[in-house]
Image (cartoon, rainbow, N blue to C red):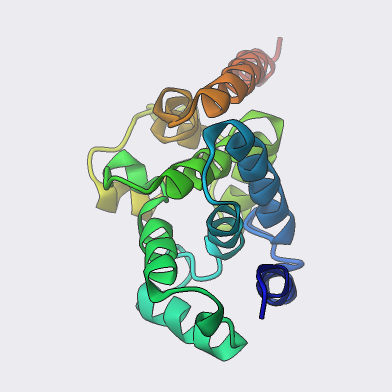
Length: 216
């Protein structure tokens, strides 16, 4: 099995299990992350196959939704799809390691990633900000029965990873506990450049949101 065949097999599986997902972690999120990662990689110089496989697989067993052992599940999937022998165990282990640690998790996981992991982390974070990021935040908040906003609640950042994962506050709070922090946590020059524009868009959105909330 060559690299093109590996990507086809993995891509088809991920599409089949994520198409129609409604929290913002759907197939089209994966497509955007893979596309952004490829764009960033043009200047970053990572291994293209590792970048794309990491992007394709990064949310298949997202710990927000999957309660089992993510590493075990990914290893089992690699075997199930029949793609393990096409790449070395070192490459697969590296991909799995990066997937385990590239999520935001409240900003408390600072585990160093490979270059390819950093590229996909930037791409994943870019899809969490800007216009798409705003749409995804409210989609996820609605799926979790969260209020859009509650002006009686103070907007706060979270103090621990557990507090972040519990995520009981309104969706606007998510901008302050995560989305507005991402611009300054990009790994690559290309990621930082794209994040700057998307960050500005979110600031403009929030300013307009608060004006309309007050009936202006």
